[in-house]
Image (cartoon, rainbow, N blue to C red; front, top):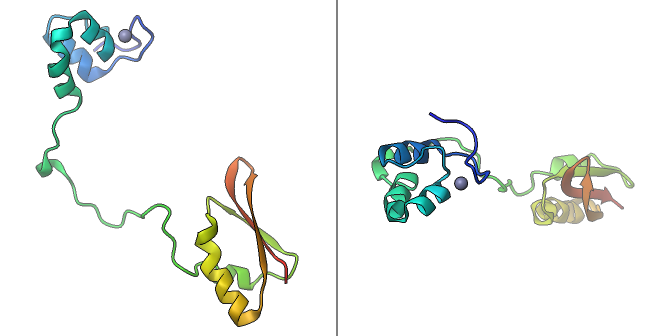
Length: 132
Ligand SMILES: [Zn+2]
């Protein structure tokens, strides 16, 4: 198997290189250059690179966390520990993710919060201040 880049600079694709070798094309070319060199191979190469979905190959997995989904009120306990003037940085958190906790603490404890979108230490997120 040839490793490295095509003459055009694109990385070589192992599956495409194997296909090229089997079809009498230089296996040192990227998929795009293989098609340029032999346009009639395009459909066959596409089929190799994007094989049809085989339902039998799909694996059912358990306990993969769903990104971006957070329990309503998950911040309540944290916010409850804050005193007026305190703030917390919540990396990767959207405003609506902490809204439930803030609404809850406003009703039950008369807490007030201010929220700003911030970028801190290379991460986007929210900074939440308890104001009252
Ligand atoms: Zn190329």
